[in-house]
Image (tube, rainbow, N blue to C red; front, side, top):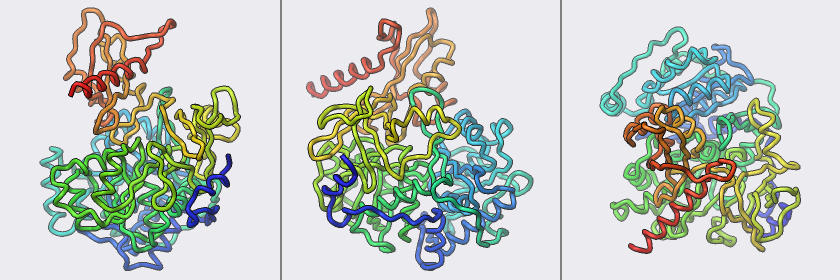
Length: 565
C-alpha cells in the first residue's frame, strides 16, 4: 500500500501531496512579525505580546548569542516551562543557525548532566529557581554561559511584583544572579541587544533544528536529530489535517509543553506559521485550564488523554463554557472512546486520536477530524506524504491485512538519525523504513491499530518513561538485590510506574525510603508510584526477568476488582 492509496480515503480538501517551502523555521516568525506586527502572538497570564515584539525579541536573543560566540551548528539548551521566553529563545537559537536542545525543567542534576554532556551544549537558558541545579553540574559539561530568566519577566503589573513572593513560598528559595561573567540576565539582554537580522548559509535538507532526547529499554537517552525539513513538513501536514481552521483567526491553547516535540510542532511552530495567537499556561492545573478556556476562547486544543480525562471529570466542569473549541488532536497515549465522546458532547468540537513518536517530529497517523471516517480504537491513517506498513520480524515485506507486526513509517518528517549514535540509527531503519517499536496491524480499509509496545516504554500522563533508567537507579540502593519496573494500568494516567523489588538477605527498606531515594535521582514523573516487595521475580530459563508476566498479573487484578465492584 502506498501513500496514493491513503489519499483515496481522505476528504477531498486534503487528498493531495503537499508543497514544502524550503525555508528555515524562523522565517515564519519573520513573516508574522513583519506582515502582522500588531497582532497578538502570545497571551501569557494576562499579558499580550505582539508578533512584532516576539520577532524583535528573538532577533535580540540571536544577536546576543552571536556575541557569546554561538554560531551555526552549535547547541543551545532551553530548560523552561511554557512561557514567552521559551518561544523567543527557540526562534532566537534558530536565527543564529544553532541547534535547539530541549530539556525538561523537571530533570534532576543527573539527568541534566547527561544531556548537556551528550549534546555538547555551550549555552543554556533556564529559570532562576533552577539555577542551583545547573550550577552543580556545569563544571562537568561544555556549558560556557547560563542565561537566567523568571516567570515574572513577562507578567503584567502588579503580578510581576507579587510573583516573587509566591515563588518563594511555593519553592522555598529566592535566587539572585548578577549579569556578569558567564551569568546573563534575560531582562538585560532584552534591554541591550539589537534586533538586527541574522543570516547564515542554510541547507533545508540537512540542517538540524532540534535535538530532542528520547530513550528506550536499552542504553541511555538518545538525541533525535530533527531537521528544519522534518519539523516544517510535519507542521504543514498538521495544517492540512485541520483544513477548516483559518490562518490568523485561530487561538491555540498552549498546555502541551514546548520541550515535548508534540507541543513544539502542533502548538509553537504551527501557531507562528499561521500567525495564530497562543494562550500559554506555564504550569498546568485543571481549574486554571477551564478558566482560561472560558476567558480566552481557544479554538484549537492539542493535548494528551490525561488532560481531557481530568477536564471532563472536574467537579466544576458545568460552570465553564468550552464551546469555543473546534478541534483537538490527542497524542502520547491511547484515547478512551468514552472520553472522546464526552469531550465532544461538552464542547461541540472534535477530538480525535493521533499517533507518532519523537523520531517522526512527531505525528505519522491520525483519525479524520471532520469529513472522513473515524474508526474507534484506531490510530487512524497515515498523514499526507506519509507511508506506513506492518513488518514481520524477519522480512522486509509488509504483512497481510490483520496480521500483527511492527509498524514502520516513511515520510519527510522522519528524523535524520540519532546524535553521535550511527549504530543505533542503523538499527532503527530497515530498507528505508523507520521501525517504530510498536506492534500493531492494519485493517482492510487501511486504518492502523496499536496492540502493544514492542519496547517496554511506559507512558504516564503523556510522559515517556523508560524502565531501565529507573531500574539502574534502584540497583544503586544497597538493600536491593533485584528489581524490575513496569507500567501498570491506571484509569487516570494511562499507565503508572510500579517497581517490583527483591531485597538482599537481611536487608530492610521502606517504600518511603525508596521514594526519597528515587526523587533525588529522577524527575518526579519517573518516580515509581507503587512498590511491591517479593521473594523472587518471574524469569525465563536463562534468567531474564519476565516483565510482561507482572503486567499481566496487574491487568487481571484490575479486571477482577472491576467485576466485583
